Length: 187
Image 1 (spheres, rainbow, N blue to C red):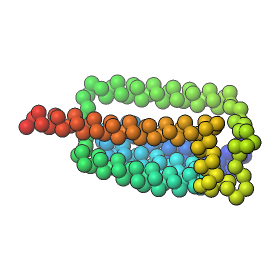
Image 2: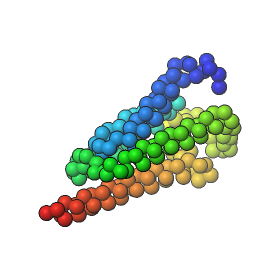
Image 3: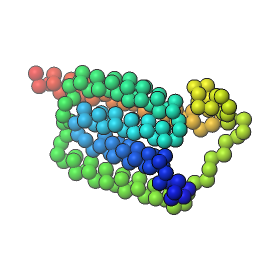
Image 4: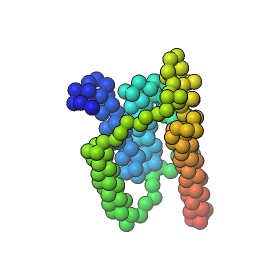
């Protein structure tokens, strides 16, 4: 990859959306107000959709906006407002630990990204029979053939995403239960 290809319009678009995705992802973790963190997640999801656009994956960008930034985030915001989680109830003793953990994670991620950039990665060679070409390339049918093919690694990532969403819903239920128990104990 040359500097000229990075500084092209598509390369600059990718860098812009990548920076926006990293910044908004950090805000999701750092912000203490759950509503603001959820809105930062919306910005992150739109940034990921922009990354898909810069990679000419128009179908994935559209699905990202409609499904995740639209439906899933509306559900998360509804749950946050329903649970009335306006302000996080954190002890001040945990703030220092959280800050140190955030900086350590950022340094570790930066080191990992530097190692990958320096060493580089060999191109992934897919078997010829798994490649989608012609009129189905970029369509729903083409994406489905590649995504749900058990011999390719994409199915695991797709299933892992559904697992993470399940964990988020369970976490919201646990937080609601703790908040309800603490409010009943005060009454």
